[in-house]
Length: 236
Image (cartoon, rainbow, N blue to C red; front, side, top):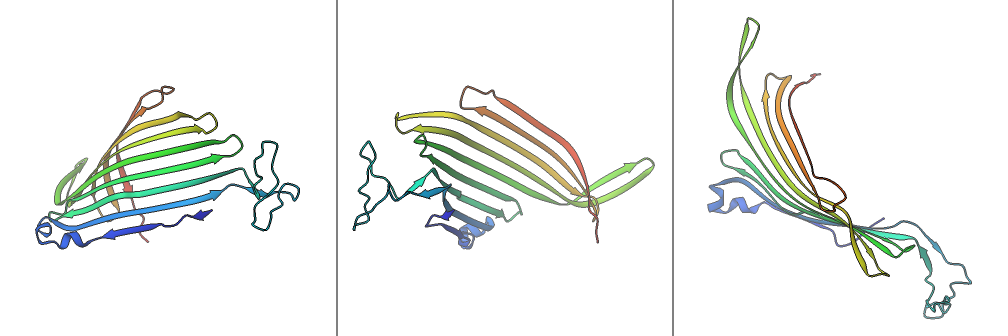
């Protein structure tokens, strides 16, 4: 596997230093990155009776269809591209509220030379998240006849994502493109965390996922989870 050039990552934190933005944002970060990989699954060198180059390095041996034999026999290759993220804004406001907006794009290409077929998988995703911390929230817990007054920070978090994925099979000889699978998925997450003590943490969460198929061979699905979680940390 080779890392196809160029790959890059750009992070810029200077927006929060602009006077007008400094009054609203405590920090504001802009990020963009690109990464790609190129992979050859397997290959073998042709025999001497199929590959005999001339002085210019060109093979003068051809098959029955007058196609020139290449030096290597390659079964398939794949290319993966990731704009992860294409653009990302990570912000903290002066009131300690955090907001994140991110756009991702990925594409995977797999070329099979056994049937001259190209498989393309594309993903586009939008992510929006926000969080806020309420300082010194008072909470009273009563267990039986015992009552305990607590005061700690309450952390609220909301995340939303919309992702579209589609798989296309491109038959090069027939010049046909056919979608084989794909879906549009929406995800909602809401959580609230409260620290009971240095070892106990209580969390209330709600997760919902909506899956809308693009290809008519599957059905729309909706899943939801809600619960209360108590976490105990063993300190050493």
